[in-house]
Structures are given as C-alpha cells and as structure tokens.
Amino acid sequence: MGCDSSAPRRYNGAFTPSVDGPPMKESLSAVNCGNCSVRRLCLPADLSAEEIDRLENITGKRRLLRAGETLYRAGDPFANLYAIRSGSFKSTVIAADGDTQVTHFALPGELLGLDAYSGRMHSSFAEALEDSSVCVMPFAQLESLAQEVPALQHQIYNIFSEELKKENETLLLLGKRSAETRMAALLMNISSRYSRRGYSATAFVLSMPRTDIANYLGLTAETVSRLLSKFQREQLIAVRGREVEILDLIALSELAGTHCSYEDAGA
Amino acid sequence: MGCDSSAPRRYNGAFTPSVDGPPMKESLSAVNCGNCSVRRLCLPADLSAEEIDRLENITGKRRLLRAGETLYRAGDPFANLYAIRSGSFKSTVIAADGDTQVTHFALPGELLGLDAYSGRMHSSFAEALEDSSVCVMPFAQLESLAQEVPALQHQIYNIFSEELKKENETLLLLGKRSAETRMAALLMNISSRYSRRGYSATAFVLSMPRTDIANYLGLTAETVSRLLSKFQREQLIAVRGREVEILDLIALSELAGTHCSYEDAGA
DNA sequence: GGCGGCTCTTGATACATATCAAGCCCCCGC
DNA sequence: GCGGGGGCTTGATATGTATCAAGAGCCGCC
Image 1 (tube, each protein chain N blue to C red):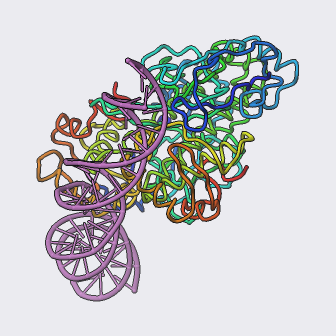
Image 2 (spheres, helix red, strand yellow):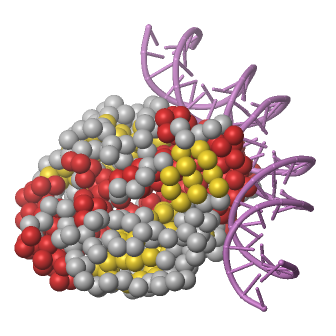
C-alpha cells in the first residue's frame, strides 16, 4: 500500500454502502514520499532520491480525520502544512459579522495551510468533508531543509505561486459570471482535478453538500439544485444526490466559458 | 529624495492641474532600500544592514511607467518581481472568452508578479493606473540570495502567505455580500492601505475609473456610481469625481461588515 | 473659446437570483 | 420495518442589480 491507499469515501454515501466497517485504519508500511502516488502533486516534484529521503524524515507523520473534523482553525498557531492523501476538505474564512465563506475545496494531492505562514497563525478553517488522511509537514523543518536544497525551495515557491494563480481564476469566476457559468465551471474544475489524479474525469462524487457549493459559488443551495437539475434536463450531466456523471464534457466546458477548467486549463 | 519621491499622481486629474511639466523624472541619488520609506512594506523587513546592502545590489533598477502602460502581460516570461514605489496598478486576468476581470489594485509598497513563479510565466496583466515607478527585483538573484539569508527567505514566504490571506478576504467579500457592502469594504480597504503608508486614511484619490472598480467588485459602473452617490447622501463620504473623503469612518466600516478593512483588520 | 469625446451620474425597466414555503427522498436509528 | 431528521428539490414570489437610455460634467484638443 502506497502513500495513497484509501480512495475518497463519502460520509453520507449513496454508492458506497456504509462507512462503518474498518474505517480510519491504515497500513504504515511503505508509506513514503518516494512511492507516493500523489507525488507529482505534492512537494517532492524534482528532488533527487537522497533529497526525498531527507524530506521523508520530516514528513513521516500522518493524521486521520473523520468527516466533519477540523484540521485547523483560524487563530491556531501555525506549525504544519498538510498534504491531502485521501479525502477532501473545505477551507472557510469567517467575517467579522460571523458570516462564513467557503474559499476552497481541497482534493487529494493538494496542500492546506499555506496562508498561515505570515503571522504564524492560521487565518482560515479546514474541515474534512469526508473521512480523510493528510501528511503532516512541519514547516519549520521544511523551511530549513529548503534552505539547503534549492530544488525544494523552488517547489515551495511554485506551490505558493500556483495557489495565487488559482485564486485569480476563482476571482475571475466569481466576478461577473452567471450562476450557470459558475456551476459549470466548478464541475469542470473538479472533473479536471480528479482526472489529473488518475480518477475518472466524467464520474465522481461531490463530497460536499449543496450548501457548501452554493456558499463557495456565491449562490444559494436552491439555485445550485435548480442548476444541476437543469443541466440534467439538458443532458449535460446525470446527477443522483452527490453522484455526478458528466455526459457532455465539451458542452459543459463551453458553458463554463473556459476550455478545460478554470484551474489549469492544460493537463 | 528617498526611495519614495513622487507622490501618487492622477493621469486624469482633478486636483492636480496637469501632468505634463517635468514628469517621469527622478533623481537617482540616495535611492536605496535602507532609507526607502516603503521599506517596512517591501522585502527588507528584518534584514541586517549588511543584508540590505546585498539586496540592494540586485534591486537597484527602477522602471517608470506612464498611466496606461503595462508592466507585464499574461504570457510574458517571468523574470522579476516589482515593488511599487509610487503610483498604482491594476491586475487583471482574461478568461477564455476574452472577458477580463480585475483581480487587484496594487498601491505603493506592494508587490506585483508573485503569481508568475510557477510556469515561469506571468498569468495576469499589470497596468499602471497613473504614472508610476517600480523597483525591479530579478527573482533568480533574489532567490539565490534568499538561499543564503534565512531572514530574506522568511520574508518571501511571508509575502506569499500574506497575499494568499488577502485573496481569501477578497473571496469573502465577493462571495455573498451586497453591492453596498462591497463598495464600503473597498473604500475601507483603500483607506487602510493608504493610512498604513502614512497617507491620510480619510481623504484620497481613487486612481482607477468606475468601470475598474465595478469590474473588481463584480458590479456595474452604474451601480458603483449610485452607491457612491448614496453614501454621499447619507453623509458617509464626500465624492467629487475620483476624490473621496470619508466623513464617517465608523459607519462606513460597519457597512463594510468588518472592523477596519478586509485586508488586515489591524493597523 | 468652443467642439468632441470620455467618464460619470441618474432614471426607467427588465431579469436573474434570493427568499419563502412545501414536500420529497434518502439515510439512520430504533 | 417504521419513524425521524437532514439534505435536496421544486414552486411562487420578492428584490437587488443589470441593462438600456439619456444627459451632465470635465478635459483635452483644435
């Protein structure tokens, strides 16, 4: 079993029968960065075997979370970055008036916690949308290792920069686009992110409730629901609860107003 | 004359009579990071005199831009970061369908170009809103210097992280808030950023046209105009063209739904 | 000094999406 | 198997903001 043993699992599943058998268990053998299947997406990108080895010494720890548990909260001291190995998370921020806003959905192979460096304190919340597993990466150690290993340094900059780019795309999406476009773009985005990971680009399970999707897109849950129904009527997708199958990838991407996804149109 | 000689100047000014006298000229004496008035906001934060000296060797170059000129365009190879010394910029991204979205307004002391690291290519446009001056910082050199100077490294991470935090706040703003709230939040934000720089928090000139504000906030120019008029009727602000005076900072910040600004509620 | 072109303002109307309100479905626990 | 509750869907209505349209102010140019 590699770094990426458990497949995403819904906590409220329709496909998957139940979640109660032997959950949250994980073999610890052969769990390392070198053979991690999300490797390409995590930090190690261009490191040599020896460098990966050193990285592993500081990223050995795993943390398992149940659906609904929070990985960190705004105000928590910043100590670690987290690489998602399986499962998914939502990031939220809270306004002064208590209003919350979902800012991201994080899927396997993606990082959480980058916004916490400045101020040494998390400024957002990360909550597991389903049972999930993360690599814990103590940033202080990562930082000093990076000081010695330029390739790691580059990779960290890369990730920060990538993250900024993604946010720009999100802004673009939320800026002035119709509810329909936003919904289509989100579906395309999730599709491409799963596909990049080796999962199906056309059939997946949304791990988040409609309310979270709505909040993220700046819409209401009712509107999200209506749009999904509409897409289904138009034969663009098939929805059943949180299961989604994209029937017409091209039409959907045209609706989204972008060729592939608003994240990274390549891949 | 220090690092921050020229004050922001409108290119379409109401206060300032004209822009044609001796523009875009700048003494080169004593232009260095150590005595730069935006120092606290640029990279040098915690560096020793000796380290600042080394930094200066690679950041000596200046670039002057006329209102409307672009600092970089999406697709340009990434070579430099830019620290704004005077003037202001808008960052935009362009959707596949050609639609553009303003993602930021950048004021003096702030950095541009961070999103370009990954892919070694700019993914957005930066256009001067008024005649402006920037410090050119070749990133490759910055990077290798950072490899030797941990304090610089920290500062770079800091800036990246700060940037991500800011974007989260912007998402919060755009997510589900009324036009009124967005407009108030933008005014408060600009106010706090100017104030942080030592300028008046209550009287400033918006360097961008209404259309850019509207685009940034996900509204139309008409709505922006109406809102400003409304704020004025309600004695919250006084507007005359692009000049704004905030009359009731407290009421405005309450409207914005945050205590001070959506950027960094402190300061 | 007067003309022409922007940017900005203001008004009337249209429309997209929110809001309010049931009812349904599915999953879970008893 | 039955009852309960949360998430989801669907409908009717309300409303905020866009859209369309006209006019005003300002600036630069001729």
